[in-house]
Image 1 (tube, one colour):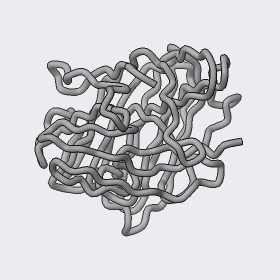
Image 2: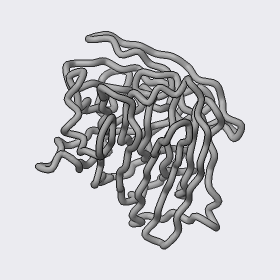
Image 3: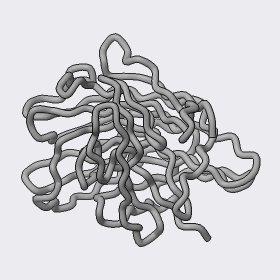
Length: 259
């Protein structure tokens, strides 16, 4: 079976270069899922990535919290294997670490699979038990990563009534320099996977904290942010694109366009 590598858009190692393209590769996780960086091209507050779509922000202080809610989309499966991940997290936009959790809507031939996971890169990504923490289309998921001192609390709550929480100790290498709300296409066997046809995923209640109280995405204007990310093919064809932020600056949608 091919190894699945979850690409975290800039997420695991990526220095962003104005008008340029940067790439890097991460190590594989024990169960085949890890985060690696994307190829990013930046144009002011908009950029393209071969594996990320959504929003990323940077702050003037360390990020201590990120939250977001999304409704698990249904994927249309026809043939072959296709993958899509939806998550919130801290770090990864420019750093070598990622602290994140989310869900997947994947296709294997005509069968769809839905599950939750968390990761403290460079440690291995961990999939949650589908029997204890089931995920199905239409479920509302709320993810949060919070930091207190060296303790990172990753929590995922489902409209099905379950909540998953894990607390991990982070080292000095965890920069806490960005926060993200992302739909992602992973790698499989070292090759960027086709993006599962998820239609539209809606993110709401998207806030983060960096040196203060939680604030909406739109409030993080440092480094020409917030950064609106469109996923594209190597040839520049749109794979998935986010809408503009809503009036409150804390909600948006991402629509699938191409595998």
